[in-house]
Each structure stands twice: as structure tokens, then as C-alpha cells.
Amino acid sequence: MPEVPPRKPSTVAVTAGRPDHTPDAPLNVPVTMASTYVAGGEVEYGRYGNPTWAAFEETLGQLEGGRCLAFSSGLAAVATVLDLVGNGARVVAPRHAYNGSILQLGDLEARGRLTAELVDIADTDAVVAACEGAALVWLESPTNPALEVADIETIAKAARDAGAYVVVDNTFATPLLQRPLDLGADIVVHSATKFLAGHSDVLLGALATRDDQLHGVLKGRRDLLGAVPGTLEAWLALRGLRTLHLRVERAQANAQELVRRLSEHPAVAEVRYPGFGAIVAIVLAEGVMAADLLVRKTSLWVHATSLGGVESTFERRRRWKTEAATIPDALVRLSVGIEDVDDLWDDLERALDDLVV
Ligand SMILES: *Cc1c(COP(=O)(O)O)cnc(C)c1O
Image (spheres, rainbow, N blue to C red):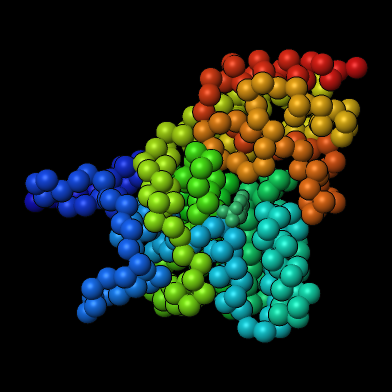
């Protein structure tokens, strides 16, 4: 028989992690509620493994091209990775990134655990120079909420030559638009809370790596520290993954159309969009008051933090005291959903028109 060609990502998203095709087997993996298992097998206890997590991990692992581990949240996965480095190690990280990741680094630095060097990840030469002597290079690309993009391949090579782990938070891009392990990263981090689960109803995190030994170390940390996912959360996230390709395709198409229209609106001074994905940032021409008004004036767009759901949401990021001071005060981050793009634009345009003086 001729060899079966490798399956495409949309097929993997739909079919991976399912039970065998035996008569009367369910098509979907069940929600297995178990704290303990009959002794003598491989799992033994509910903190060490669960068949529902395993189905989610199998699917996301195939999409990223590595082995995956699920965690209770994205930040639990982030903490597990930062814990890999030795005491006093130097970590290179983006000056703009998910706020919680930056706060974790700051907390570890304040307690003398490590030193963090924050860089502009779009400045490849500067990041490459910073790799020397680093134990870990943390990338997020595109960054939150500045939407800078890193040259992952070049940076990963420099970091590996310097003996540092290369970690990429792939939450904004998803494995459908960017596969960091193919570009030389050691570990991919996800907040599965966002696009992967995709329905604004679950908190979940994940890591993926190609290195079996590293996988073992990370699994060991999860077993020991206990930041394990809930079974129902893993099941909901797997259900979300089944439509990831359709959601990302539609949300990205909507985002690209909105970017075109926003760029021509006089109330908008700047549109930031990396060219892919469904996260857009705009800076309001009339400043912070206009940004605060905008998020109150729409009926379809919901003012909310977080991103990656089927519904369109937006947020003025500097309303958070912990957001980087280099992010413009009047920057509003848009998480574009999968609604009809004309309805989304109509709602935004009405609010924006009111802001033109
Ligand atoms: C939300 C987010 C996280 C944190 O994930 P939680 O699931 O909220 O803990 C990490 N990185 C990025 C890029 C995120 O957007």
C-alpha cells in the first residue's frame, strides 16, 4: 500500500486524539473524572495524567509538531518554564509581552532568583547580542499589545549557540499561522484560554517541545507542583480545537478587512497589525479620552480584557496600571471575532464617527 501523506493541520485539528474506530466506541473522548486509577499501570494518580488531557495534548502536540503538556492556565505553563533556569541566571525577554509573564519575571528578579533583560524583540541584532550569557530567551511574537514580530529563526539560532533555551509564547499566532518548533524553538507556550479553546469560557495553558528529555523535566515539574488542568476544561479546549482552523481563518479575514477600513478613518491615528492573526491595535487620534469613549459607545464590540474568542472584544490597555509605559495611552487592542465583518465595522464606525472633532 502507498504511504499515507502527512495530514494537513485542519484534518489534524478535527481528527487527532480520538478513540479507535471500534464498533460502539464514542467518536469523542469522554470527560474522565478520576482522582485515582487501579494500581500497576502508567498513570496511577489524577495529578500524573488523565485520558481527557491526553486527547487535548495529542491534538495540540500534533499541531505544534511536538509533545504537549496541558496546565491549569497559561501562566502556570509560563511559571513552569521560567523555573527551568538556575539561580542567578539571566533571562532575555520582550519589553512588551503578556503582562502576567512580565510580572512573573519582575517578581523572580525582585526575589533574587534571576535577572531579566528586556529587549525590543523586533530589533533582531539587539536580541542576538543579548543572547550571549543568557540561560533562557523568551519570545512572544506577535507581542501583546504592541504587535511587534520577532525573527524567531535567527534569534533561536543565536540563543542555541549561546547555550540558552529558546521559548516562544505562540498564543497570538496559534500553530496554524506559526510553528516555533520548526523555527528552532525548544519550547512553545500557550494560553489555551485564548484562540485554542476559543469561546471565552475556559482557562487552560499548554507547553510543547520536541525534546523527550525536556518533556520529561517539564512533566516532572507539573507532577510535583500540581498546576494540572481540570478535566472539563481540557475537554472544552479540545472541543474548541476542532474548529480552530475555521475560526482563525474567519477572524483573520475579518481583521484584515477591518485594518483596511480603520486605516482610513480620521479618528484613528495609527493601526498596528502584523499582517496575520486576529489581534489589531489602534491608537486614537484624539487621545485617551477618545479611547475611553470608544469602548463605551459600541453595542456589538464588548469592552473586556482577554482575547481569542468567537466574539469581538476590545480594551484600552493602559487602563491597567501594570501595562508598560511605552504603550500609548490611547491604544485600544481589538480581538476580532467571527461575526459578520460589515456588522462589526458598522458598530465601530458609528462610535468612531462620534469621536471626530
Ligand atoms: C492570556 C495570556 C497568557 C496567560 O494565560 P492565562 O491562561 O490567562 O493564564 C500568556 N501569554 C499570552 C500571550 C496571553 O495572551
